[in-house]
Length: 214
Picture 1 (spheres, rainbow, N blue to C red):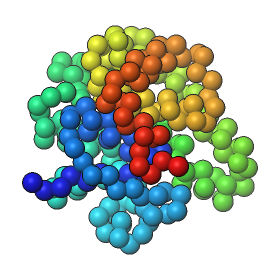
Picture 2 (picture 1 turned 90 degrees about the horizontal axis):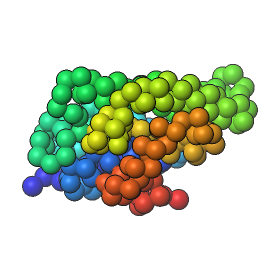
Picture 3 (picture 1 turned 45 degrees about the horizontal axis):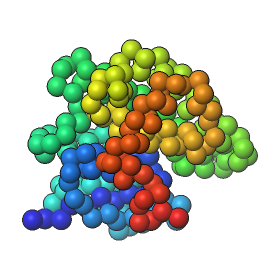
């Protein structure tokens, strides 16, 4: 059987999502660290397999897929047995995608290290200014998500089974804590995150448990 390889970085929210998805699906994989701080994502070797120069990248027996949400949907379709990453009902499925995209497309990109570097290099932002930029956009996203989750949540983000929404939610909560965002205004979000942290597939994907954690 061809090898399944995940290229990632322990602290990358996007790679964190894919680790959760693989764990939920019960799929074994080899982990290859790409150190973003050292610029390894821009090495010729890595760009040869992922021209986007980002993590994660999943190589599933020769099928090379970039972008975390695309990887998660691929896993759900290619491996239909076991946990489902998207709900069956169309409305619930759309709600899970809506929450996932609100995080992956609207919040997370604005805290990406390359955005922070650009703010500092081109606009003279201080380190504290960069951090406040990140906090602002996380709070803005969470303000809306808290209201959305209050309508969609059961035990988890959409109903009572973990979904793509939760796969995106927990890594973003990790980032929020890392950057010192006050989570007091988001009780529904925090309740869901705490429930997810008790699930082994989510707990085992935590950045602190990865081989490249420092």
